Length: 115
Length: 110
Image (cartoon, rainbow over all chains, first blue to last red; front, side, top):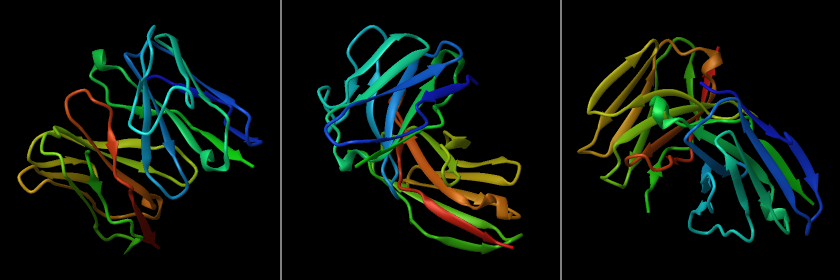
């Protein structure tokens, strides 16, 4: 399976600011997803990152708050905009290579604390 | 709205015992089922997948699926302290993104 890296691994931010999280895969994948895992909770899908077009957002998540880019088949970014303490969470990039029949697997995550 | 229900635990079992983790789901259209393990502070890792009714064994792990009862389980034989983690049940319909349960925390006592 491909190796996934995320930057930053963790950050502490002030409310009202924005943070961009990068997800890099060492080989091309068909699908890239962004999940959030709040403390003590399960994984919630934020959106599917579509290569060359707008991301597909799940109910409760909007582009203005979580803009996503995916310029190619190995890279995606998630921005958490105008942050509040409620955005404190782990943000996980997940990829899948459907051409290889692989199931989703996850990057190491980005731990975000908003003060 | 797909719902995936798991008992949050913690489930405590002695070393060497069988740990039984259960998951129920609401969407009858779900076709693929997965178990992920998540150690504290780490990201989830896939341990088992199952697509048809019955049992699937992989080493000490056995996944069981009953689509009529909308039930999937994971058995861990000869449990080890290193199995202590949160186990997440996930499912999907077709190639849609995975939907996760809240996870069951397993503690294996040496």
